[in-house]
Length: 380
Ligand SMILES: *[C@@H]1O[C@H](CO)[C@@H](O)[C@H](O)[C@H]1NC(C)=O
Ligand SMILES: *[C@@H]1O[C@H](CO)[C@@H](O)[C@H](O)[C@H]1NC(C)=O
Ligand SMILES: *[C@@H]1O[C@H](CO)[C@@H](O)[C@H](O)[C@H]1NC(C)=O
Ligand SMILES: *[C@@H]1O[C@H](CO)[C@@H](O)[C@H](O)[C@H]1NC(C)=O
Image (tube, rainbow, N blue to C red; front, side, top):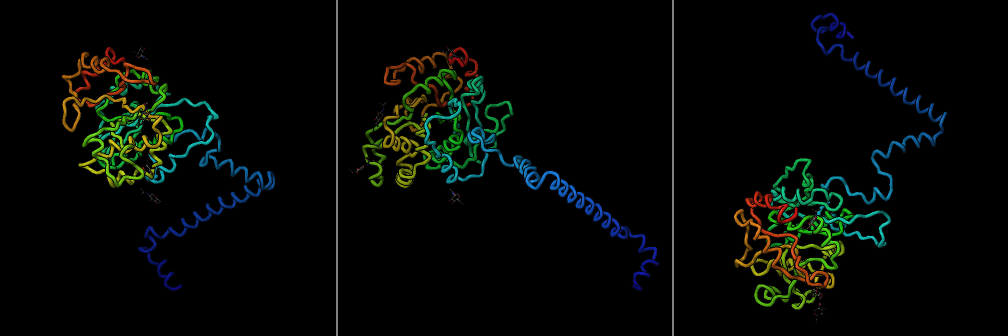
């Protein structure tokens, strides 16, 4: 008591800014008290006039801001972004959901999922943009790149925000097949994706979109290159430890660049039988898993659905461990005439001269000449 009186006498103490604080605090309390009382009066008023049910209703109509109503549209609509926080175990589990009722109770336009497996940039992006233009209803795009790379496509680009959560993938290692399964799993989350094509940053389209869509959608088979190759680079890579799940006669080799339908995509993402065999017994430098895993497991599981050839042209004629890379000096009309016209294959069991829809490998400096001849030669 005494000390307070002394404080009050001291002008220096009275002048300190902290002095009015308790008064402000009191004002705040009063304001909150008034708001709180107002709110309780309001709710009492509402309960009296609309009854307890309607107050609950008012609260529940506010809820849908956070929770979408359960309609078929909300159930089938893909999420607007591709980023998620599922790990592979969770993602693969979710991606392998398959409806048991075969007819879709809504209008479904089947789409082609283009899955770009890349290290970083997409040097051929301008050519692909041209290819996709005007076909927005019929495709979707997924890009898997090294996690250290951050893509920077403008909102006008078809590649804008199409990057999926990625991990390091090394050529010839299981991490490469993991990346491919991750691409498939992310693409499976969109119920309208029916066909799945794996392409790389050095791939280009050889035909316009309409031809690609028609060729794929009307095919009875999926285009997975799978051959029973004798010799050290084919059967020679088989390991007896893979039996009895995989026998020598089931062992297949083929290009990594595939096109498969939804049914096969689910099989690949859902596999736990063949994965450990390949992971343990197909190792560099004796065996390269991306040339054997899907090719072999689909040959065992769904041989009648496979065309056993790839849609992606590669030139191995120069020999060596890697196929030829084409640069700006290679891009001439005759070059494409050769690829497009010197071919025969089976399409739906009939001889066909249209065998390849895509080609690789093209170096970044081929882009300019490719754009120059795209319309005339490739019809893009
Ligand atoms: C993903 O998370 C689940 C739950 O935490 C865990 O059981 C599983 O092993 C994880 N998978 C991977 C590949 O990390
Ligand atoms: C696609 O190419 C074919 C043959 O090259 C052509 O007949 C067709 O008009 C082209 N379609 C479009 C949409 O450009
Ligand atoms: C591999 O051969 C064994 C013994 O002949 C057989 O039991 C097994 O089913 C075969 N595996 C496949 C995938 O055909
Ligand atoms: C592809 O090969 C499998 C056996 O590996 C065979 O059963 C199937 O008929 C072949 N597909 C075509 C289209 O010939």
